[in-house]
Length: 197
Image 1 (cartoon, one colour):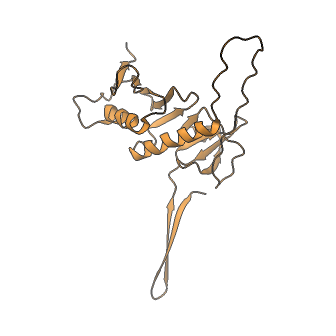
Image 2 (image 1 turned 180 degrees about the horizontal axis):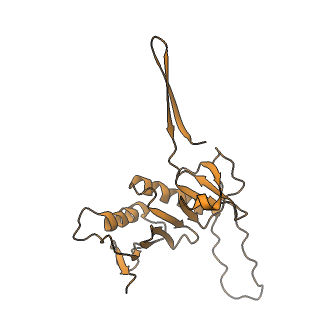
Image 3 (image 1 turned 30 degrees about the vertical axis):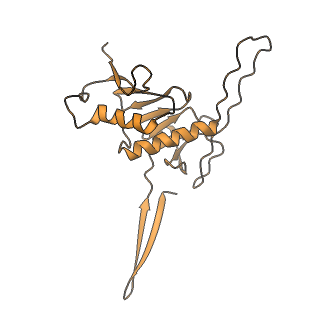
């Protein structure tokens, strides 16, 4: 299950070369029972079943659970049963979010993290609320991505703020706190709030 591709070549007179490329698996998701962890790729392929201690070595994807995961197959999100409403309630019914949409957004974020070279530095991603996406960048930052718009741009802004080449404007190694990249406070600006504030 860890094999991404295999290439076989022949070198005369009698040599066969087999090149195996392994998957970069860095993401852990619970299944529907909430007790078992599964490793998946950014493309959504289920790779392995691991115990809770081993799952801590991987980036955790929160807000979704897998329905009947099978190693080597595509991950499918478990749909949650919406809470029953009180018939006398006058509030508007809650917006139903499909688990497949949450999984799709999670995989998109994972692919963007890989595109930006941020593999393994993000410890968790939370897609529980698609209007308030969050991730934890190591032990240093809680990152608020906001909704699903401009995700690649937001992740690039986060990366530039934390690891940017412009050291005068980049955050320092010892900084920690909250990065708001939702662009709801100020358009196209990363807002940093220190833990000390």
